[in-house]
Length: 425
Ligand SMILES: *Cc1c(COP(=O)(O)O)cnc(C)c1O
Image (cartoon, rainbow, N blue to C red; front, side, top):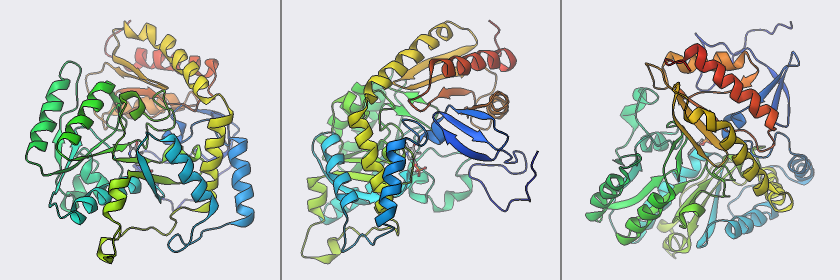
C-alpha cells in the first residue's frame, strides 16, 4: 500500500473526525471510479448526480481538448464566443417552449440564485413591490446563503441561520394529500405578494428522493399564472433525462417562467450552469435606465471550454439513442424493484425514470441517523459508491450502467436489509 502525507484538504459534507477520506481515485471509466489499488468502484450515484452518459464520454472529452486549443476564460461582458452562442441556441431549442434567454453561471446553486434575482428584478422593475418567495417543504437548492434560505432548514444550516432570509413553505404533496399543497399555495398567492414559487419538478432529491405526480406541478403553474406569480423550476438534478424525459417539466406539460439547469449539462465533465427565462423577464430588465440592468456576474461565467463540453453533450443526445438507453434503464430498475415492493423490510419503493429509491424500515431515520453512515460503509466495502440519505437508499447511475452492475447493486441492497433492517424477510 502506498502511503500519502497528511492532506490539508477540507472535503465537502465530510466529518473529518469520523470519516477520514482515504480512497484516492486515479481514473474514471464508464460507470466506474478506479482507485490507486486498481479497485473498480461502481459509481451508483453518478458522482453526486452529475455524470449522465458515462465517465469521460469520448465525444465530450474530445470537445474539451479541441476547445482548449483555442480558448481559456474570456470576459463575458462586452464579449461573447461561439461555444456559448451555440449552446444557448440549442438550450432554447430543447427547453420547454417559451423560454427565450439564457444566463450562464457555474454551479447549480448559483443558477438558482440567479433565478431568484431575476424574479425579484422582474417585479422591482415593473414597480410591483412583491417580496415573498415560496418553496416546497423538503426542498434543496444548494448551499449558498440564498439557496440554503430557500431549502429545508435543519442540522445542515442551523449554524448559519442568522444569515438566512425567510421564505414561505408549502407542504410536500404526500400521496392522497396533494390538494393540501395546492390549497396552501393558492392561499399564499391570494394576497398578490408572491414573487415566485421555487420548486424541484417531480422529485425532491437531497430531501430524500421524494416523488410527486406531474399533475401537481401542472396545477402549481396554473395557480402561479392566475395570480401573476412566477414559477422557477430547479431542474439542476432532474434535467438531462434523469426522470425519463430530457426535462421533468415536460411530463407536466408546463413551461416554467425560469428554468435552472446544471449538473448533467456538460454530461458531468465540467462545471457549468444556465438559467433560462421568458422574454417578459428579460424585457423587464431592458431599459435606457441603467438601474434596471441585471446586476449579476461571476468570474467564470460561460467558460468557453465548459460551454464546448455542453455543446458536445447535446451532440451526444442528438446522435446517440440516449432516450432509448434511458427507457431501457427505467425498465431494468422496474424489474429489479418489483420484489422489493412486497418486501416487509422496505417501505416506499419508488421510481422516477432512471432514479430508483426505497426506504429501509429501521427504527431511526433522518440524514444523520447512524444507519445512513453504516450503510455507506457497508456498500463501500462492496466497491459500490452509494450514499443513502439516512434510511433512504437510492440508485442514480450513469446511463451506461449494465444489467450486471445493477444486479450487483440490488443484491447488496438486499444483503444490507438483512444486516441493518428491522423486519426480516
Ligand atoms: C445539486 C443541486 C443543486 C445545487 O447544485 P450545485 O452545483 O451543487 O451548487 C441545486 N438544486 C438541486 C435540485 C440540486 O440537486
